[in-house]
Amino acid sequence: MTWLKKYKKCLSICLFSILSLNSYSFKLQNIYFNQRMDGENGGYREFYITNDHLTRQRYKVNILPGSLKNGANFIEIYPKVITIEPKSKGTVKVFAKVPQTAKNGEYSFNLQFQPINIPTLAKNKEGVAAGTSNINIAPVIELKGYVGEVKFDEVLKLKDIKVEKNNNKGIVVNAILSNDSYASIDFGTEAYGSNDFLYGSSYVGNVLGNTKDKKIQLSFPMIENPKDLKKIVFYRTPSNTREVIKEIKLGK
Image (cartoon, rainbow, N blue to C red; front, side, top):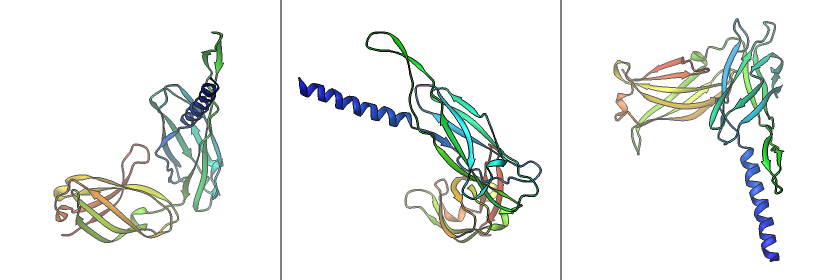
């Protein structure tokens, strides 16, 4: 029965590895800050953590220095310790307030999500209840914000716009995008037809500062004829609020 003991040992190691990797899983949505950090109100954005586990998860959120101009000293978070129930989401709110004396430019900071073990009771082979816990890694994400006024409607430029029928469905818009500022921004686009009829939206993603001639492709499956596209709108939703950045009219 030696082979059976070896098999059980191997199976136990494999299961331990799978469970350990599973315990490391961490879903964080809305992972860009990209807000102005100075001014009257400073910057604000919300981040959403998803717990797909069947057990409660708890994290301590730490603020660490960034790799650019350090903005960590200007950041506040709430809550600093977050508990997320199984199969649910939690919200972390990030506030930035930079003094007026700060120089214009892009600043960065890191958020570390340090797991806090929540002991659970389990029975050992003698039937006695004992506390158990997991050892997890602490995910770290770097975020950026900026100081100074940036008029994104002027610095975000879209050129060489080509509207064509999609091979699958609807239309695609191919264009060249530039961001002629020092500030990063994440945003999406909306497609409008005649009488401001909204056909749908297409996500662009994060565009770094000083980006030149980036090729983008937008897909709008609800538009049948390329001539029906009359306007493209750049917009973002920093904290569940829609903010229009720029409007680009097409055709007559």
